[in-house]
Image (cartoon, rainbow, N blue to C red; front, side, top):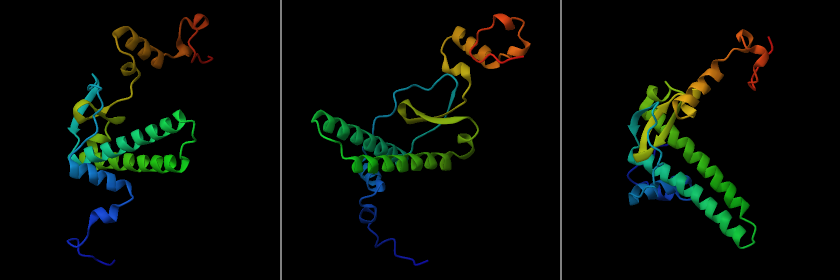
Length: 172
């Protein structure tokens, strides 16, 4: 492998025309996209907060998505066809930034990000882990209890099998 002097490298030039150039711009300017406004959920565990680099990546992917939406809406409102090549390029850039974003978080926080079913970002750039249990999908005790009983219901052992009208009813 050939080695180059890192002191002589201009990363801005190297990253030009790549998604990393946008990340670099956000890092240098110190600007960040707004965080999600959802609060930390009842069944979620805060395991950290985004670093400046992660905020820059988050901001870059947010910017790419917003740019794509704006470009498409503007074209449609003018009765023009959207630039499909640019939309596809933005889609690839967004997917790349999203993968990099989650890779950075999982690399930094390690095991904590793999112990539960999912990882998410919440208000104030908090990183949370959560489990995908049915009861968390429905707020309130009645709906949570209903979701839990539906998920655990075994039609074959149900005393009211003949009257049961649950959509997932299984034959005995």
